[in-house]
Length: 388
Ligand code: SF4
Image (tube, rainbow, N blue to C red):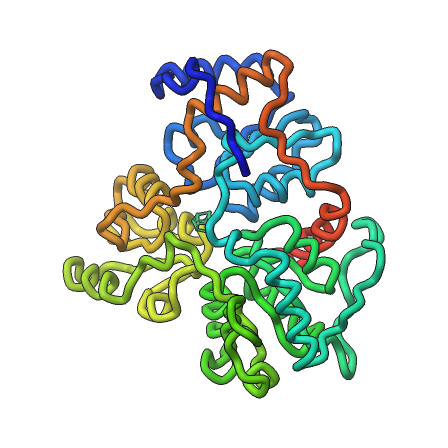
């Protein structure tokens, strides 16, 4: 998304000046405003958040404040889209910097996904004609469990994906998942079809299916959108239970087994805790793996004196270390690894959108066209129905 440069008054603000003006704008807006902050945001943003959470928790928080006219989402574009889809038209969702995208979400474009679906249709018989209109969420969104000869492929997309991909999934009988509810979502999908097409993050799909007892070589195929049949033989696609889109998170793919081994050598007794967007070998080498919320709860509940090497985004790890001073918490990767797109939400941008709102001008609203939102809402509602 294109983001116009900030007016120079904002571009030149120091963090301290911005903080004072942000708080003043928040006071002026009162209950008309809710500010959501993703855990990967820098401290200078998180201090202004009314709620912090991962994408799953924030998607629920966004829908829990019908009284707020404005939801300012300090996160990335797909999160603001999901919040817009899940909230009524009377609420406006705002992303402080429209250039805050997600490189993983960008790895699965809708045209590539439609092409993959067509190719799979030729090999495994995917149904080509979805129902013409989306059900309203109040009519219920769950497809019944499969009977004999159920859907050959059920699409599941990670919440880290564009709204048009979520719509595709809703339209084709699938669901959205998060790193929190990925096991439940995959079980849900396998109750309704023979195979799962999972995108955009191959690692979350592979790690989750591996933990469910599936074999990465026999039961999983990797779909490279730039190759015919995703780079697979037709036989392998017919045999696979999971077809994993070749996407990844540029932050979490940096973690390695060597880093795990180094942490164990330097800190005997260390517990290694990683996010499931890490590669499978790191996932296997760690002591524990789970979503951002799981990582936070695990460290918070750990005994004083315990030592944690954490494989996830650096802003979250640094905050965990600060908020748990009785424990040793450090990032598994000694090089700093922030999410560069999350980092685009700078205090100056937050100040700019809030002062505009306080003055009666809406800037940077994220609105998903209803033709896309209707089916995306179906897929997101299935995610909420599947639960954590
Ligand atoms: S951490 Fe990875 S998945 Fe999350 S927003 Fe950044 S690039 Fe996307």
